Length: 476
Length: 97
Ligand SMILES: [Zn+2]
Image 1 (cartoon, rainbow over the protein chains, first blue to last red):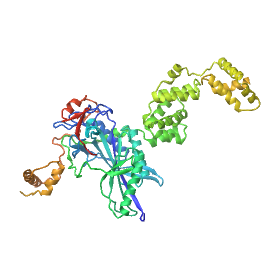
Image 2: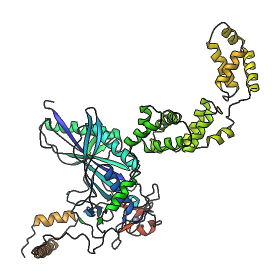
Image 3: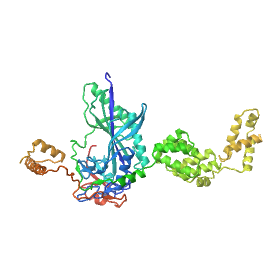
Image 4: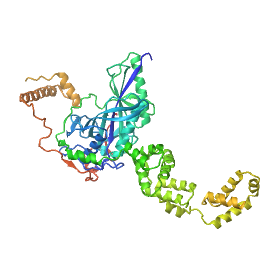
C-alpha cells in the first residue's frame, strides 16, 4: 500500500421497541407466535384500515432522543416510503423522512485517544417488515407478517467513526442507554438491534468523502468488527488497483467472512416519500416533554457514582455490574433484601458470568430472582451449607430459579452441625487411615488434607471443613 | 398540454410501479400524466407563501392508542388474501434478499 487511507464510518441502527403491541394497531408483538396470528387489516395494509400511533412508541422514541442529547422535533409527522417487496404488504413502509422525531444529538465513547463524541444525525420512528423464509421444498418463499408493524426506531449517526473499535464502543453505548431506559433488550443475535454500516475510505487528509457502501446482515459485535475490517480492505484494494468503489448495498456472510453485493430490493433507489394521510401529525407539548424527562432512569454513569458512594465495592465490580441494567437491578434488589453487597457482587461476577458464558447467554438472560440469591447467601452465611454445596445449589438456581432453602431441604444438603456425629466420623476416618495418621504425626502437613477430604466424603460433603479440621487436629 | 412526458420518464415510472404497459397504454399514460402535471401547475399559480404544508385533511393531531393488545388471532382473516399458502404462511415466488 503506497498511500495512507482513513476509514469513515456511519451507522444506521434499528432498535425494536419493547412495546406490548405494534406501532399502529392492537396486535401483539410477542415473540414465537404461530405464523400470521399477530396480524390484522392494519398491519397487513388492507385498504380502508386506519393506523393509529401507539403512544408508548412516541414516549420511548423521545426518551431515547433525550438520553442521546437530541433536539426533539415538536411538530412531527409520518411519511410513506414506497417500495414493492413481499415482506411489505402495504407496498409502503410508514417511516419519517421530513420531520423525524429527534435530530442533532451525540454520545460520548471512550477511545485510546480519550473521550470522543459521535454525532447522532437523527432518530425516526418506523414499522418493521414481515419475515421471508426460503422454502427449499417448493423452491419458493414463505411470508409471515407477525413482525410487520412492530415498532422500530432508527438511529442514524454522523460519519464520525474511524475504526471497528469506535463502532463497537458506539454500539455498546447505545445498547446500554436503551437497555437502561427499558426501551428495548437490544439483542443483536435475535434482531432486536440491527446495525447497518456505511463505510468509505479516503486518502488521509482528504476533505471529500469517498464513495460509500452499506453493509447489512451484521448480527454480532464480532461480525461488525470483521465486516468493517473486510470492507475497508476491499475498498482500499479497489482504489489501489485504479478501480472505483461502487455505491451499493452489500450483505455480510459471517461464515465466509466476506461480503457480496445484494440484489437490491429497490432496483431504483427512489422511494417517492410523501406524508402519510392516515396518521395525524404529532405535536409535542412542554408537559409531555417534561413528563418524559422526569421519568428518565438513573443511567450508568450516575449509577456507578452512587454505587461508589453507597457500597464498599471495587471499581471493577461496579463496572461489570452496571454494564447490564438487568444485572444491576438484581444486584440492588438482592442487597435491599439484606445481603452484603460484596457477597452479592461475588456471585454475580464469578459464578453468574461463568455460567452465562458457558450457555452463550447475556446478563439480560439471567432468570434467578433476587429473593433466591439472597436466600442462598443467607444459607451460606449461617453455615447451613458449605461453599461447595452453595455452588451446586447456585447452578440449579441459575438454571431453574429454584428456592435454595427448599432445594437444600429436599435434597438433604444441610451441613451436619451435630458435633457428636461429626466427631464419630472423624474417629472412624482416623481408624481407617493409619498410614496418613502416621505421616501427619511425622510432620507431613499434606496428610491432614487427605484426612479432611476423607471425612468430607464420608459426610457426603455436608460438613463444615473448618470444624472437620479442628476436630482432626484435636483427635490426632 | 404544457407538460410533455418523455418515453424515458414513463419507462422509469413503469419500473417503479412494477407495471408493464403496452404501446397503446403507454401513450395514454403519458397523456394522463401530462394533464396531471398541468393541473399541478395550475395549483402552483396560487400564492402559498406563509401557508403551512397540509399533512392531514382534518385539523386534528395527537391521536394515539394505548399500548394494549386488542386483537386476537388474525391469521384466518389475513390468509384469506393468500392466493397460495403453506404452513400458515403466504407462499410467493422465490424472492432474493
Ligand atoms: Zn395488526
